[in-house]
Amino acid sequence: MAQSDTVDRILDAAEELFADRGFSETSLRMITSKAKVNLAAVNYHFGSKNALIHAVFARFLTPFSATLETAFDDLEERCDGKPPTLNQTLWALTESAVRMPQRTDKGISIFMRLLGLAYTQSQGHLRKFLEQEYSEPFSRFMRLLKEATPQLSAVDRYWRIQFMLGATAFTMSSSDALRDILENKLGVETSVQEIAARLVPFLAAGMQAEDTMLVPSFEQAPVA
Amino acid sequence: MAQSDTVDRILDAAEELFADRGFSETSLRMITSKAKVNLAAVNYHFGSKNALIHAVFARFLTPFSATLETAFDDLEERCDGKPPTLNQTLWALTESAVRMPQRTDKGISIFMRLLGLAYTQSQGHLRKFLEQEYSEPFSRFMRLLKEATPQLSAVDRYWRIQFMLGATAFTMSSSDALRDILENKLGVETSVQEIAARLVPFLAAGMQAEDTMLVPSFEQAPVA
DNA sequence: TGTACATCAGTGAACGCGCGTTCACTGATGTAC
DNA sequence: TGTACATCAGTGAACGCGCGTTCACTGATGTAC
Image 1 (tube, chains in turn purple, blue, orange, yellow):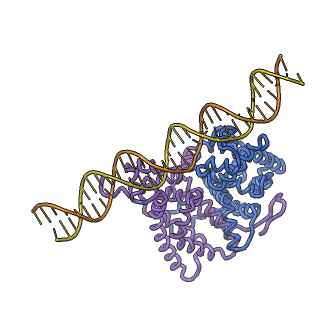
Image 2 (cartoon, rainbow over the protein chains, first blue to last red; image 1 turned 90 degrees about the vertical axis):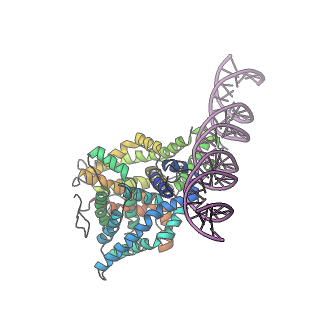
Image 3 (cartoon, rainbow over the protein chains, first blue to last red; image 1 turned 30 degrees about the vertical axis):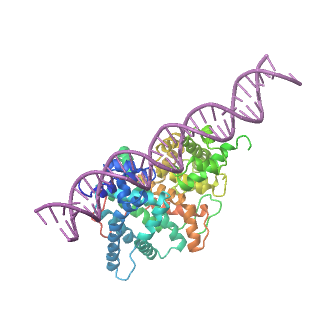
């Protein structure tokens, strides 16, 4: 074995296994045997299992957040002064994700599934790590969303952003399984790009929905 | 201790811990000590940890699916012959969930969070169990969605249903945490009912979005 | 150029721990005769 | 009414196992003099 592709082999194996099975369902023994590497190598190179999880995220999030920053820079420049629209903002994010240099062909779906898991599995250490390292592009995205939806109250906007995150994280995080079902049931193949192209209009429409609380038979129409 | 509230105490404790931390992060020792019950009692009454997980789901899904069936019956009767609208269908589901008799005040959010986890954590046995036991109301809901959105192609509808499920499962599954943030940041209290009241218009708008693929700078506008 | 030492990637085996599960047992209650 | 037995909920202690981590060690490469 060459000198230190060991680190990369561990990261590759861990990334795929984590995406497949979640963090606590993936043992170091699975990772090291998939990576064809000694069990102790993980602790030698990374220090702990948690630190390995952080490294897996850092490897794709660091370049992604850089790409995203420049995409937002470009967008704001093109709009000189005026705030970008919701569609433009969502597409800037989507494009950045799709255009990221991929290590493998299933790169994006692994990447999305990991993000979904980060939100979903209750790994306190990971959430803390992500907040520390990547709060900046996240806040910027939130600011752009805010400027693109001035008609929404803060509370409405807050919840609709959660709905968007949910639809995205959930769909992308199970997209391999979903795509399989779709291919079997409907005989259609779907790329991540195509899913994104379907998702963005859905999200944009949801974000901009009128709050018509004309509800057939609900006890009391709640706050508008 | 009385004769067999043991079973219920185990179910109560398990339900709450699973919702908080996920399945594999919750040990039988946590459950039995929270329930103030002997460790061996879980295997005595349920047979295994997996069977306990199934029992937790069955306890709330069985009455819920009954409620849902009658809600759909009512709805279809009221519409006599014509297919119910998307809004009516979504509200029938929402109302059934909200109206379910609750064991505790945080009943619904636990219930929603468990459903989210079921989708999200890769517990093969659980998915199999749910498909076996509750496929009927699920298929019926899918059929109603189909009839309420005749303008959509099968593929579009498929993906948009995934987006809806994602937004719902994700939001509801972390709704306690989200609500806390909201109360701290914006000083607003939000009930599950209010979240639902915000979610339904978002979903309906997303489902009925026009597929305007007028995209600023995406390499190739994908299939419509 | 040759020797001594330091550094570093990697290894094999073991560590202690918490896990789900099992097993022999208890003690209360119900049933048969 | 009294005795023998069966049933059943629950218990305490232990089982074997897989986990993340540690530790003493190896062997190759680089550096100092």
